[in-house]
Image (cartoon, rainbow, N blue to C red; front, side):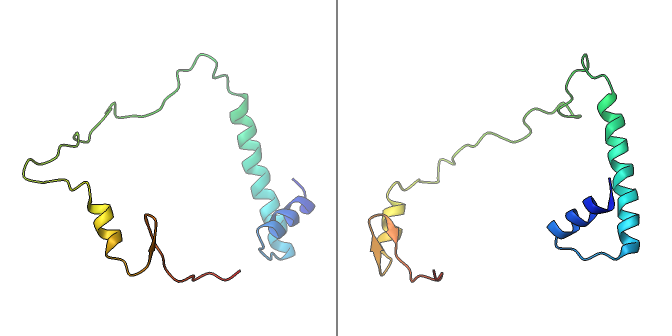
Length: 99
């Protein structure tokens, strides 16, 4: 990691840094990259992937409709029919974005 790379990163991030900060950031980023390099050297060929720690597979209940709750298949059409201006199955509204 060199100062030129630090300046490029700060420009891409649109962050202004002082010359003192350049040196500090260069050292910190170099340290982080060195550590990542050490991690990349670790042999993980025979290590089983570790996806979770709890063993819980599905903690949510299955969706069940209440017997006293009626599902209205025409609800979408009824809502759109109430709109003052519509086209097909869509509600038309004024444009809020300009080109």
